[in-house]
Amino acid sequence: DCSNIELGSCNIDQAIVEFENAPWKRELERFEELDGNRPPPCWPDLTFRIGNYHIGFMLESECKKFRVEICMPPQKKLLGIFSFTKFFEFKNVEPARAKEYLKMFYELSYAEQHDYFLRQQTTCS
Image (tube, rainbow, N blue to C red):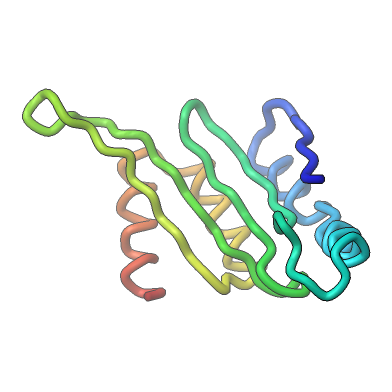
């Protein structure tokens, strides 16, 4: 059973509070109770959307690290026909770094986000 709660719109300060107050540990314990020693069927996660793109945080292990996924819609079409959605994925992200990614998602322009996450992908790989 994977639940979904719609929080409505929020600003960066509210988003940080939601991230910090998310019931990560409680959700992980709930999955462990349901499935015993098997990995949960869907790890606790939290996703923020702006328009048609999003940043998602999925708990990876014992409330210590996250997988962060960022989906950015295409801004330009290649040859006026093709457009490509850009995905960024970061694994084993510490909570402080995850909050930094959330802040950049809210505060930077699309072009700045693209450049920032591309640099992070290069340096974190």
